[in-house]
Length: 320
Ligand code: CP
Ligand code: NVA
Image 1: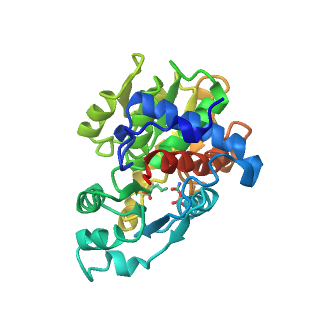
Image 2 (image 1 turned 90 degrees about the vertical axis):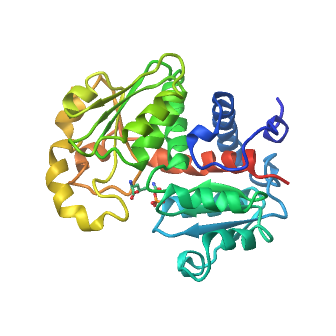
């Protein structure tokens, strides 16, 4: 079997700002590589990818809090032989200089930056200002593509053949829902999203995700959560108020209450349906303890798979 190092296609984009940056072939290849890397992790220093980032630095630039994303990127970079640089958030996003100038500086020192910020356009500004720098989206208000890669890796592990299955996302049509739809549709998984009026996935995002669908997979938007989960083989939810929406929390709690994933909603899905959540979870709000702690919950597999998926993404896009 060829090692992951030899399977990398030189045609990968320099950035990973969206799942849609990968062609279908690249999506398949990176997920395959992530599975190999997960398996090879037991080999420690003997894994073929141990030196993939040797001699290179990767900067982590986070404008919002993170447990999973920051931790898994740090571990991923170390395990690929690279070094982590973590400038303080105020030095990068505090307005001392333009984002483009921050990018032009970092390009002289590091091979890649992993950015968590608000507007997706900030990531694009960063990428355009630094043509030799790989930029990875570690969550924006619009997308969370690294999360989605870990999510579909988890589904592939659980289901084997994922084509024709259905994932129902119940809650806010947010960054996680958007990237999940892109990744699932790209693998031939149907996506149903149930949201209250006014909180549906953005129509332009829905159109873009649908344009990426393979094998006849469909995206359907619902208001009624029970209707959305009826054909679902997995139910996914996320917080009702995302980072940056804290002032709307009380209002959103009231609006989203009927969208809680509880035992009754799980019972309305297909037999054996999985429960998924990107975490952090607000137990008692979008999900009950009885569901998140149940045997069908795969939330910590998703969290583990952040590491393997991100190693594969970095390996694919970061250039020598
Ligand atoms: N799921 C996720 O991105 O977690 P963090 O916000 O802790 O990074
Ligand atoms: N939608 C959430 C995801 C957190 C991982 C947020 O943006 O805060």
